Length: 112
Length: 112
Image 1 (tube, rainbow over the protein chains, first blue to last red):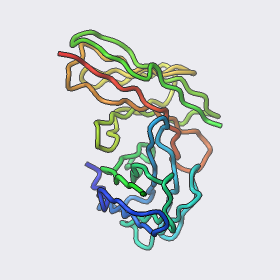
Image 2 (image 1 turned 45 degrees about the horizontal axis):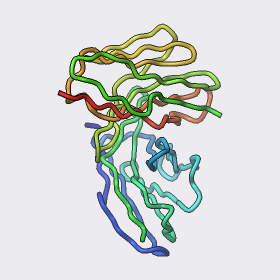
Image 3 (image 1 turned 60 degrees about the vertical axis):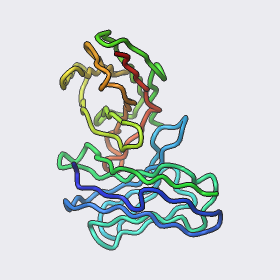
Image 4 (image 1 turned 60 degrees about the horizontal axis):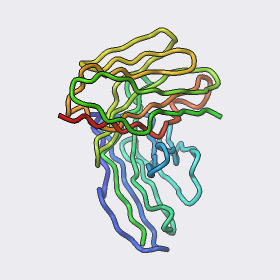
C-alpha cells in the first residue's frame, strides 16, 4: 500500500461543468502522475509533477490542468468537461527506487 | 516514439495449465520494463521491474523474463485467483523521470 487515496471515487457530471479530482499521498513522494484508462487504450499520461508547483504535460493533456501546492496533494481539473473525458482516472507516485510507479484506486468519471 | 504491444489480448486457461504472456517493445534505450496486475475496478498493482536482457524475476507462480525486444510473463500452474489483466510498461532512459509507456494489457481468465 503506497498510501495513495483518490477522491471522489465516482462522479457523474454534465458537459460543460468544471470538475476537480484529488490525489492524496501520505509518504512524501516527490513525483506524482495523473493517467486515464479507456477501453482499447493503455494507461495514458495526462500530467505529472516533480515537486511543489512543478508540473509538466503528458501525452493527452488537452482539456486538463493540474496543480500541486503541497507535496501530498495533486489536483486534476477539467475546466469544462466533455463526454470524451468520460474515463477512469488513476493517480500514481514513484516509489523509493525512483522507478516503479504505484497507483491509487482510481476515480470513475462519467460526463453526460 | 516508445511503443508497447501485448499479446494475446485475452487468454483463457484451465487451472494448472501453464502459459506465457508476451510484451514486445520498442524504446530509445531501456531504463526499465514493468509488469503490473490489475483487478476489475482497482488500480494497477506493481509486480516486477526488469532492467537488462537476460534478467529474470519470480513471485509465486509468476516469472518475468526480458530480452532486447520483448518480455514474457510466465504463469506456472495458474489458479483462478490469477485471473486479472496484466499490464506491461517501458521506461526510456534519458527522458523525464519515470514516464512510462503502457501496453493495452492482456486479460487472463483461469477456469477451475
